[in-house]
Length: 324
Image (cartoon, rainbow, N blue to C red; front, side, top):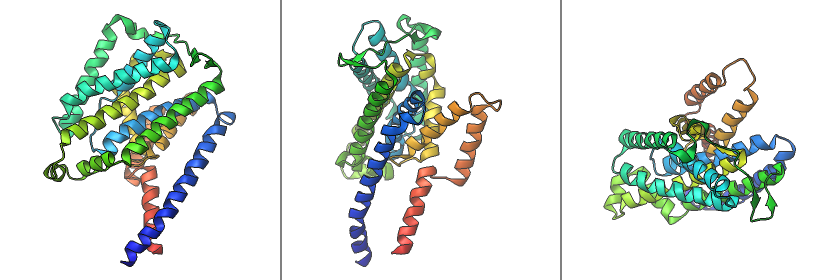
């Protein structure tokens, strides 16, 4: 009884701490472009949202997808084509990318969720590679050249996205929208059912939940949010290429999520920031960046099995228990 009372007493403090941390983080992001290179920060935000979308699936449903590059890159292609060829306003073009990614998620998820474990992962990988081959062959993607020179245009007809700071704050707004959408999903009754499925799928079935529908819904939501990241990236960097849809991109987002911490809200953001920062700051060095990232990954797996943020949260829990 005493332990339960202490737990309930700690909840308001935990909520207050979370709100303070969130406010400080948002304030830091608002001033960040005056300290760091805005283009690098926009890259971090796009990939952080991509990693958060992937984490929604693996961290809260327990489904490991090797095919999320299809949604990220597919949305990039849809958005780039709509903005460059059709002349669509950037936000509308991004929404088209999100819709396209969600539709792809519905089709791929409908096929993949019928299997579990490694079979699920291999099906998503195979279907993703099929989509990458299609992107190489169809005319509108321009093959290996990709879609280049995508105009940023004017958001809502009057906000000039060609200004770096303006583009950064629009990207930040999209990232915050995606992040809080994921937070709302995870902390909703739907999210609680997803966690129950992750912990014990057979028990969830025995309780009467139609598990396949919940898994498919989570898969489509994850795909749509990955598409939001991909469409935003296409506008930010003004191109969409085969790199965005190939299996290496799926591997990269898995790496980001593992480094930061699976099943944590900010872990994928930390992982994405670490990987992108290493890629940018060490690009001119003689030492291969991929080798260094691989070494860091091995060290983190050996020393931080829960990821960087996961280990920090576990340490805080232990200290809280010790203090009580």
